[in-house]
Image (tube, rainbow, N blue to C red):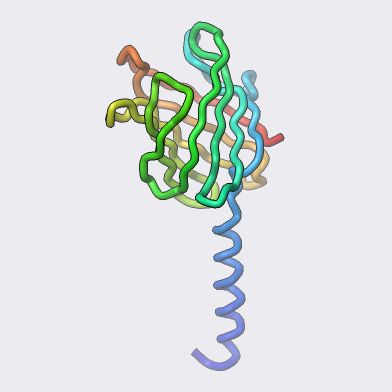
Length: 153
């Protein structure tokens, strides 16, 4: 590399690191039910909050279950694909987060070591909306799928 290229290489490296480090998930996300495809009888995660904490992110979910009763659960973890304990839900005892890129990540819910529901999230380029594609099985073992559309608050 010649002397004129070195500053450009350093600048591009710093830009890439900064862009990747910015977590587009941080903040409060609210469900837009009219833009979502949720089958009757399926739970609805109405609000999701991502907060930066020392050890990664704290994620809190609020919504209504299949019977219309409110739920609140959450966990703290990082985007490393490892399992972290979930507090507040009988349908999952662990969750993992895995970042694909700055605009795409996956959440896997597990109960007793077995995957139950996987959610693939895609964040829009402008960072103002995201879509979660849910697939897996209910606590009763029935197949479930939905698409939930969220807007950043």
